[in-house]
View (cartoon, rainbow, N blue to C red):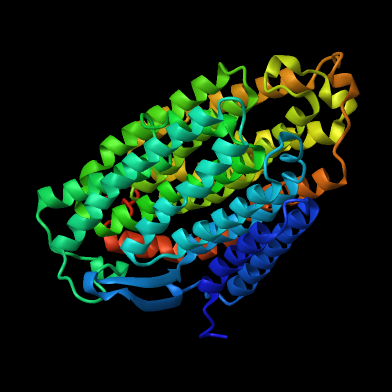
Length: 509
């Protein structure tokens, strides 16, 4: 099985599923859902089979596929994964069937195409797998832009009352970033040696370019990734897009698509532009710290439950970016682990919030209260997801946030100290949201709430299980991630700061 095209298969399975679902008659709504769920589970099974053959101690790419695509321009169809890409692909393929199952009845009452929605989810999964696996810079750019199409229609056709505004804002911000990235990709090709495989990531490494050129190209890539992440101050599209998306779409948007931005930073910005990355690091760290505090403060003041969760993600992405640009092994390992942990905890929050909204018909926090008295399982799982989001020890986000802060502190002490304020603010926005929605006496509407049904329990259970498992045993995931992080550090040409141990009294200096 060593020569089996695992990554192409992973991308093709949901694509075939999307075509099958789209070809079904409109009246076969249940069949469309079942086919979509079946193809997403098959993709997950192939992911597991591939992951079992992954050699965790290897630093380079595995399961590589390289074929000529546009040889005149040096473009190849090239795929491969290291530990960083593998865990993000695994996260995407786990969350997709969860979102499909969670969205089982989301479109039924909207009089919109049921098969269209589930076909879009599968098409989005194809692009998500492809963008994390691409090892050709131009192919990565194509998939980076292609993801916009299904997400735009998920928001614009199946979202809330302000869906058109949110979808257009999402598209315009993303296209702006994509144009800057395209200009940088062309510039990178111009300064490279050219050739039939000029855009291969490995061939782009170490490209000789002047200082000013490197910095300009870095900025083009970085702004595109900062918008996608999103990083303050280019974040304003996210609260609207996440709030107006259907719950399943919001999970894939915030839980997976936004990780393409931070993945791009660690995959492309740092290795391709090592000197420029070190030059920009203090500014990027500053923006990240501002984002941590800004997102948390705005989350505290939200009255819309979905917008609150979206603003918490802006704060979390600040931690991830800070860990990446701290240029330490601990920081980058913690940032990669944070991407995975944030994906699962935010998925749980958005999906359980979706269950609440489907029962009450309102996104306003003030319209809830006393839910834990009538729906204890719903309230309990919401609490676990919230506590993971605020990085409670024993739950998944704690280890990653701790690694990010420790890794940052060794190089940027002030930034790490200020960023810890985000932990305190996280406690406020999560616990206040829980208090206002779940505690107290049930109101007229919440008193009739049903607890989680069987389908909803199957949606939430794997997410809670992963949150708890990664809280107590993150090491297997770190064993996969760390070799890829070590390789990135070598490509950038930086070492971890030497520990400062004070000399004992009377000893020679």
